[in-house]
Image 1 (cartoon, rainbow, N blue to C red):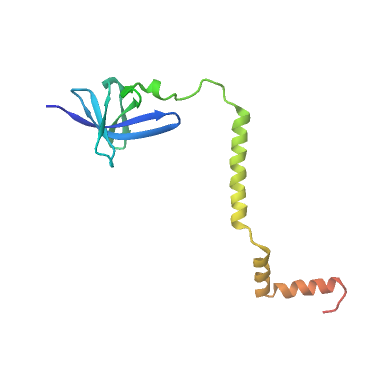
Image 2 (image 1 turned 30 degrees about the vertical axis):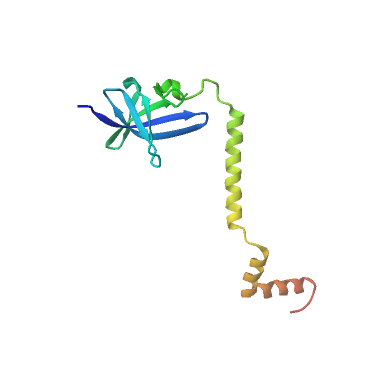
Length: 144
């Protein structure tokens, strides 16, 4: 009896990471995927050593990284470079942090900014406008 496992296949093309759900056949070592809107399916040769396990809570998912051009699996080290060996660029890190903070504060200011017309309406609704006029008249020497 052929055992078929559920598997998620990840492909990395240029700057696009995409996933596909499929079934893995342990006997023929192939994974078959099908897009939900297409009737045709694609097969990929998946090496059992290239299958990794992702633990999400109580579930364990099988996943593999594939090369779309060759229709076969690749080891994780070849498919994704986890981190660069180059030293950290401090200037770029600070510039990105300041830029992010600047946009954050700008959005906060724009959110709570009250226009002049609204301020005058608020003053006119209460006694505030009368107090401003009286203060201005008293500055110029009028006895009010």
